Each structure stands twice: as C-alpha cells, then as structure tokens.
Length: 271
Image (tube, rainbow, N blue to C red; front, top):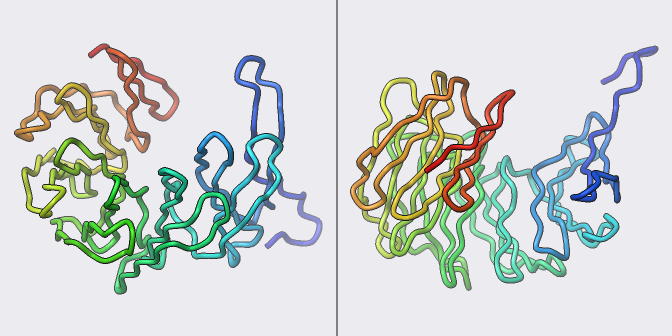
C-alpha cells in the first residue's frame, strides 16, 4: 500500500511500438500494485496475464491493432507466457491447472489439474503438437496429455522439484531443463528417458532450449553461467561458452547465429 503523502507509483504498461520508428501505437496499463505478464501474439491478438490488483489476475486477449480488450479469463496467474497453437491458447497457472482456450473467444476447451504442487504450479510455457500438450510443474513432474480431451497419456518424475524451463519438441523427443542443472530428453510417445545431461556445479535452468541442426542450445541461470551446446541424440556436451552473469533469457537462432540477452548485455554467437 502507498502511505499518505507518498508519491504516486507509475503504472505498469504493455507497449505496442512501430518496429521502424519506435513510435507508440498503443499502451495497455495496470496500476503499480497490479501485475503484468509476458505477452505473446498470433498476429491478430495479443495474449497477456494482467491484474489490476494482485488478487484478480486474468488472461486477457487484446486487439493487436489498437489494444482493445476482446476477452478475459479469470484464473490464478502463470509465471510464463501462454502458448499459441492453431487457434488455441495453452497456459498453466500457479494452482497447477493447465487450460486450453479458444483463441478467438476465450472459451475453455480443456482443463487439466494436478494437486500438491509447489509455489509456481505450472510455470513454464507448454509445448504443443497436433495431438499432444507437454508441460512440467513445480513438483518435478513432466506430463503429456491428449490435446483434444485433456486425458493424461504419461508422466515422468524428474530429479529436480522445479521445472521452469519451457519444453521444445524434436522429431520424437521433448527436451527441457530443470532447476537442479539437468537437461532432459524424453520419448514423446512413452515418456521414457532418452538421456539426462548434468551441467554440474551450481547449474540450473530457467532458460528454454532451442534445437537446430541436431544440437540443443540452452543457457545456465546460476553464476558463472554458460551457453551449452548438447548433441540432441546422445545428450553429450559439444561445447560450452562462459558469458558471466546468470541467464534467465532463452536463446534464439537465426541462420548461423545464436542471440541471447544477459543482464546488461546482448550477445550474438556464431555457430
């Protein structure tokens, strides 16, 4: 709360800017005591967790052209952004509920719930294929469900109690990092462990992995932090590049260059 005579706190804002000039197109704001999550878009709408008060979070769809709110679904907030997939929105929340929503209307399509989770519930952005949804939770369980009806297909118990890294899908494996320094590859059909790469030391992963040309790239969170390159088939480390500070961001690959932001710096790394 703000005491009497205290200066007014600034709002938190989501900005839409012209990509060439940087000129403001629109803003969507919540008060300083509210919450604003990570946005994602499908080219028509922007989807973002927002709360005018901490006690009333909701996932909202905003018109990409002018920021007008189109719909909202009240739910406990997610620590990660929602996943957009073929006209659907998939998101977890702090209560351990995974929701599948119609992107145009917000209508609930699927609800999957697990109990007894830790503080952040389902924190990472789910991965989605034509018929499956894959996600980890704050009790160390990684799960695959049927996309159409929400029925559990399999689950896997990781060694770490925290799985904040968003999974990535390869041809027949799903890959994700854990907070205890493990990078896992599971068979998408069975959930069987293909390999676990132990980064060792003080390692842990908030970063999501990216896969290109048979190599998994992922960034360590704890200092001293590195970018790791891991063979997607064997789980063996190919190379490691120390870049100093802890890295919460995920890498992005364009052509033969990997880009990643660290606190105070932006890196371009030749592959």
